[in-house]
Length: 204
Ligand code: MN
Image (tube, rainbow, N blue to C red; front, side, top):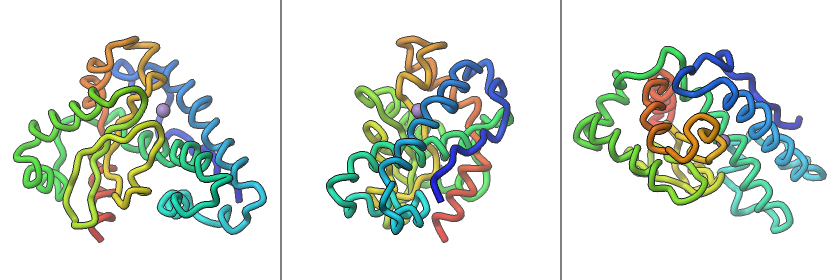
């Protein structure tokens, strides 16, 4: 069963004015679609790997054969990262996290604002293309970290809670070179319900 491009859980214009409709259409329909097509191509002739979920595949990416490892890292990572990114946003998003994630963020970073500053800084200072992440590490601690390109936190033993795509394709049509403005606007659409569900599941 080949991987499939998931539908967005909202309309393409639902995140306006923070993220514009044209960016969402191209980002989902062209960029994410290309990652799905390319990971499927890389896995042709590997039925054992095709049978795995994208999470299982990315968790063991370093063990894959040389001939496909880079392609799966880039395109499989692109598929998984974007699948989380869409669900991490909502037209009803923004504000501050409540529930167990809200408490854990305060405990780990001191306050929501301290976390927000740390996460924004990770997003803004990631050189070139990549992502900012909030993850749960193996010790059960929340960590903020950025990763280059489509490298996936799952491949580094981290469990993803919240992510922000800072590739230029995620913001250039509306924000051009002003990545900090995109990062600032993104906080208005953060889906804390989805992040909290990921956190609860990751804690086990
Ligand atoms: Mn992207």
